[in-house]
Image 1: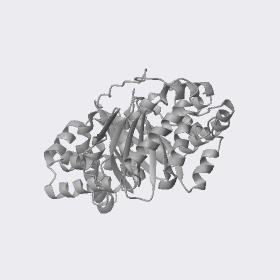
Image 2: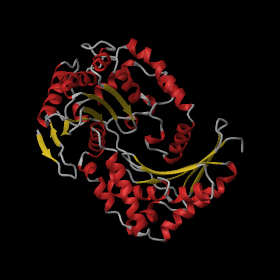
Image 3: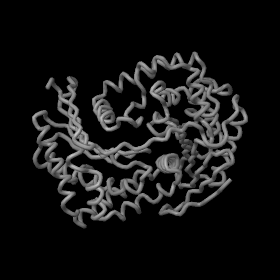
Length: 433
């Protein structure tokens, strides 16, 4: 096993310990009246085939149905009677589970969470009872205009990569999944070497690590099937898709909308090219994050061409999407698309002033710092970066990396990744075209 202390701007240094079974534990003592255990798995909808799309999310639900040692509902009862909280989430690139407890309850509750993950029952009866819940969640998602717009855009942006699919999966697939398929999926992916366990809170680091390590040892000793050792076989390896070669335009009619939607998007680097994402994060803030952003001021506040407009640099594991979204009147669709391109062209042609750049760099870095002040925030940050990049230094050094972005780097990134003659353009109309 290897134990390291990672240098950073954070006062209390996180400690990283990798066990012989492949599990990585990251621990940090933090002066807060809570302890958060956040377990991250490198498994999400990206590793699924089309035939089982939605399995990772369905399994997240089923994990809470108990183990041979924990009856269904017992985990939640024990958590709630101590005032702790628990939840989970599934994305394209990961699944993570967490509990937040009082420090004095951590050594009692942590083993329960680990037991659920490693020794889930996944019985046929529980599976069939949960299936309608998943189908209803899919229906609610499809009824959500924002999610529909986003999914239409991802289908446009990715022709081959699995990010084009939904995390929840389609109804037709969920209706056909079996409990045996889920047990096979769990056996394959829910292995220690595919997990990062992050624990942050007001206990000594040695105690935090010991509790997590003992919890895994106990749960693994109870496993009914032999644990997989070594690298996981069959992990999908994907090649990023080429940038758009021209304007790829798609129009839809959505009668549930009150206003039209415009999404303009570019294929950009993901976490595999992490250093290439920093300048684009700053560009997103310059254009459309906050009331003082260029397009917000111009298109919404000054000229009232849009009801709202925002920009995000979405960073997935294999590839990213630079994403500009606006709510607007149908008659303004062409005008706003033209004006957005004009703002991007300005970044092609002119260097950002030092005054604006200094303000935006501070905003981006501070949003990151402010978003990682609690034990759960900090644990999520470490878990996300370690699970997806293999190194928490990428989390610790983000503010520093943002502060090094200069005007020339921004212009270079815009010229390379945001051409005004090749992008995705999604338009949703509230009435038939």
